[in-house]
Length: 265
View (cartoon, rainbow, N blue to C red):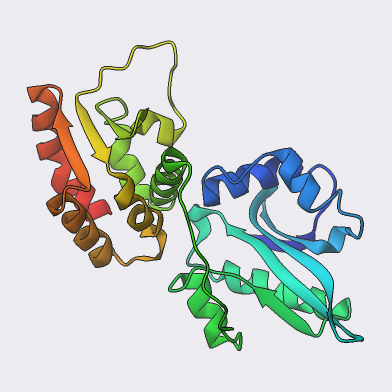
């Protein structure tokens, strides 16, 4: 597909931030990217690797060179961060190219140790373990969800963006149902980025998430199809997810498309 690998150049910023938001769901703003990269005191254009085809940025990967000091000895390290491949182009070996290009760049900068972070069980995690990365045990990390609506929307956004079939199925149900956690509500149209704020929503089905369901939903990206369906069923059985029908037509529509939706998941 005429793909090329190159370093960052000025003018890439808008496409990069758009890609990161598609891949990670509300990753952040242009200002955040600039703070992490182009405005960093030690930044150089080689610290960002770009995968591009026909003028479209398909992949992005960052490198942060830092000195690890143990006692009086310094060790140059490279942290591989913000690896993103557009959902349409996954499964084509582009992530491997992105990792290899950054490792080569890190070596040329004198780094002798490469560090990276991935969710356990993810494709990136499995690839890195197979190619020589070693998992380092660390002390327990404690987590508290303080923005449940943000966690839910990010988890669902990630699920929809990475599954073109599911996205296609939901296109025809943009305003038929909405998701709710606490007092916050958003529709399928919001997830698809196609919400028309001038039109009044006519929600027919509400899917209400308990706060205790959020860690499972946020981890959907690391689950197989069977595990996703299994966890959805368990969450519904234990009352962590409840479905409320505002209208009978909404019930019929959801029943008609439920098999297709489950198959797409």
